[in-house]
Image 1: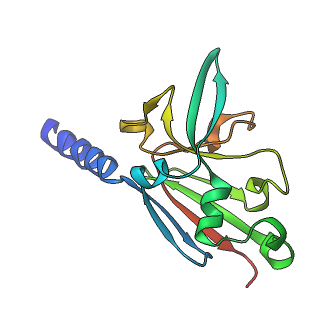
Image 2 (image 1 turned 120 degrees about the vertical axis):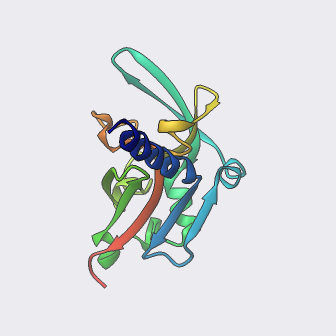
Amino acid sequence: MYTRRCLILGIFFLGVSQAQELRIEGAVKSPLVLQAADLAKLPRASVETSNDGITVRYEGVWLHELLKKAGAPGGSELRGKALASYLLVSATDGYQAVYSLAEVDPMFTDNQVLVADSADGKPLTGAHGPFRLVAPKDKRGARSVRMLAKIEVVRLRP
């Protein structure tokens, strides 16, 4: 039993450690596969979150900038049928969350979402990284997906 448990844990952590890239795919013009070095070259932003009296400063790239780079509808293009689009956000451990495409677009809302690669000046690692989606204006942190691996743009109406 002990050997089996160790094997299962080893496979889980192997899977977690292998996800060193972020994929943006689905209803986009140019699917992206980003490594940490790719994210580091893009315009940087930061946000602070507070939970149970602990404040954390995350740094990374605005999600809407990555979606624009992938060719997802945004800004003035986000109207009509495109408004029926959402983001299915997935982590390496199987955790998922959903955002509407409009709620991450700065022309629709001030609730900007960050794809973070560092917290308090240190790279996100292990069970927290290498990427984390941070929604600082959400009242609960349930959609701040750690171990972020994939963002799929899904269009409900073709």
